Each structure stands twice: as C-alpha cells, then as structure tokens.
Image (cartoon, helix red, strand yellow):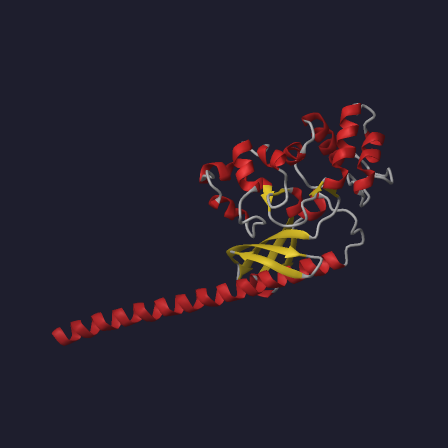
Length: 268
C-alpha cells in the first residue's frame, strides 16, 4: 500500500514537472517568434521609409497610422511610428529652452547644459545630473529626446513642445490648427500634403496663406526659429505589438535611424 502511495505521489510530481516543462517550452517558443516578428516589423518600417514618395515632410497622421501584417494561425504584428524630432533634444537645446520644460528651472537647466555626460546617449542619463529627481524627470520625460541634430519637426511636435521651443501659445495653436484643417500647398482636401508644412523655409508663407491674422511678433518669431525647424525626420520610434498563435506577447519600442537603415535602440 505504501509503495503504491509513494508511486502515485511520484507519478503526480513527474506529471506536473513535465507539464511545467511543456508550458515553459511553449512560452520560450512564443517569445522567440515574437522577437522575430518585431524585427520583421522593423524591416517593413525601414522599407516603407525608403519608398516614401514624399520624403520632404512627415505628419502625425502619416506616422501614427497603424500598420499590420497577419500570417497563418493567428500570428502577426502591428506597428506605428512616433517622431523623435517632435521632441526637444536635451543634448543640443539651449539653457533657455531647457528651462521651459515642465519640472525644470534655470539652475537645473544650466546643470544639464554643463553636465559632463552631455551629449547624452539616453534621456534617462538626465537622472545623473545634480539636483535632478525622478519626480522632476517624469514631468518632461515624454517631451525630450537624445536623437537628431536638435531641430524640431513642426509637422509632428505638440503645441507644448513648440511653446518650449520659443513660440507663444497662440502661434503654437495656429500651427496645430493648420495641421488639422489646411488642405496643404496644393489647396485640395484629401491629398497627401493635407496639413503638412513641406519645407522649413516655407512655414511662414504657408501659415500666412492659411491664417492672415498673424501678428508681426509671431512672424518675427517664426523667422527667428526657422533654422530650428524641420519638416521631416529620420529618427523614428516604432511601437510594435506581436501576436503569436492568437496571444499577444511583448510590446517593443525600437528607435530607428531611417537615414542609415539602422536600429539604434531596442527595448521590450
């Protein structure tokens, strides 16, 4: 009897162990496939950028549109882009610009400018700046980047970022309204240039045609900021979701230098 009980217990334990190993193997397989799907999404994204028929400008709608690809047995991926040039570059921004970030002040902005780690390799390195706290950093984390040459994409930056760059609130809102309502340079709704500023040197001209109520000060500000503006970007973050056999797994954030067809940062 005791032998039978012991064998039963051992059999049950062995069964549980085998079941656990099978589940682990299945999970490992899914994770491996998920990573491969994310890399495939990156290849798709880079190919799409190479084939862009209008490389001179990007818009929030164009970049933020969700792309997807499905394979057999419920496996596939989705992804969309976020523009790193729609943010303030903490490695190149002036003290005055940095001081306008939420959670910053002039003293902290000066500490960032004088930090020996600048240029930063990751925004999180700002936490090593003297007097920077996680609470302060959290207030502006989504508004900053370390990628690019410091120019801000006027087509993708939020009104808040445009104000931090140096525009007044009214001008930033006029730019946002242009991007939402304007038919673009061809003056035809439903075409590819809707809401797009097509060249940094034409931002003022396009906005004047759309809104004839620009003040002299706003026009001067736009002219002064022209060299700080871009209308397209080569640094994009792909937000990728992978599905393996009908089950969603890891989500990935991948920063790509589309000018060099390179992945420069990967997280999951």
